[in-house]
Amino acid sequence: MAIEIVLPDSGRVEVTDTFRPGGRALNGLGDSVQAPLHWSSLDSALVVLDSATGVSIATTVGTARLQARSGNLFSNPQTVRILERLDSVRTAGATRDTVFVTPVPPATAADSLSDSLSVQAYAFGGTPGGRRVVYAFTIFPDSGSVVTFLPNDTVLTSSATGIAAARLQLRPGPVPDSVVITATMRHVNGTLVPDTVTFVVEFRP
Image (cartoon, rainbow, N blue to C red; front, side, top):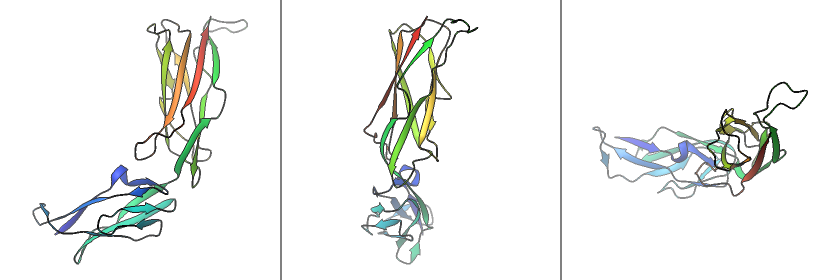
């Protein structure tokens, strides 16, 4: 026999959240067999609340090992990564910018790039580094203008500051009056952090 374990959310959970693993006992052919599992944590950062289901609560940022047992058979310990709990996301700079798309003396070339659209994530348990900020845009008027984000529409927060930043670039083609950009974040379980940061970039001749 063997024990197969499946961890939700790629084995990640935010501190103070509950975490429910999946598991089953397998026979020598790899088929599932009816055998109850009993769960335990090998580290204090993750506390098992129900040994029959494996439901646990994350108490401290870091890593913890989770193990299942069926009779005298033990699974390999599975590592759970416990992250800071995202609390909010706020602007970390100006929320409005004006881009002049024709040269303004003494400039020699038109501008097509906005200033940094910076956001800062706040969390319980420490600085939320390496967390995804997703940028999206709406063009006014909807004239087929082409814009894109640099370096990308998804940026990771800094491990030192919790700040992420992107810039909006106008491609050749129709010039919009303005572009509204939203920046959002999600918890590791997929739910949205309540705050949305909104930026407005205006384009002028």
